[in-house]
Image 1 (cartoon, rainbow, N blue to C red):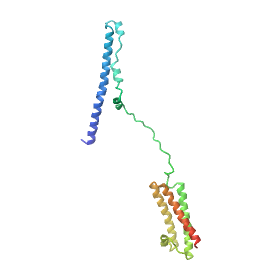
Image 2: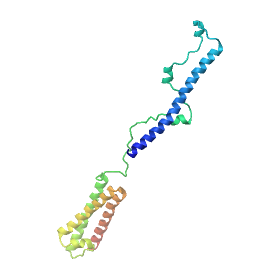
Image 3: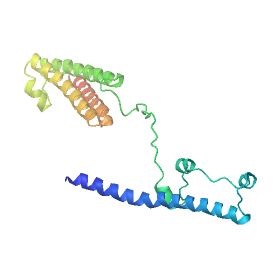
Image 4: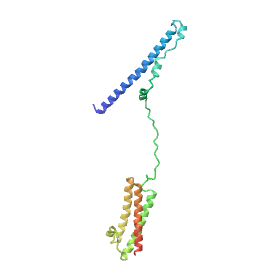
Length: 200
């Protein structure tokens, strides 16, 4: 026999053992109550066979009433056998908060547009400085700054990387870092554009 069936059988036996004395005790108490009622009625006066004396006797409770309305003992033992009625209701769904949002919401769209705009400004500033004999100071951008398509690819990859890092933070639930990534990149691009314009 599987272990879970053994555990279920043991629980059933324990529950049955606990319920039988409680139910039988209440039935015995009701039967003794009926006997005491009949005995007290007989002690008050002799029971005659006439219909007038029989009518004065109190009526004993019927067995159907005993079966339908059992009186269980009141106390801590009775509370443990009270039936549990589950309450089924509609689960309230909390409204979405500021922290939980779609990735392509309005705020991210504005931030990514700003990232792309600052990257474009950085591209044109860097391209103009390189054409006039300037030198790229960023070692990562310097690898792709040999040609215009390479320089453009560098800034496109930079914008895509910012979006990818923001999406990674979004998926892991770090929504503040998701926004901060775009702000940090725009600040870095704005500093590069300002440096390029002042050092022509």
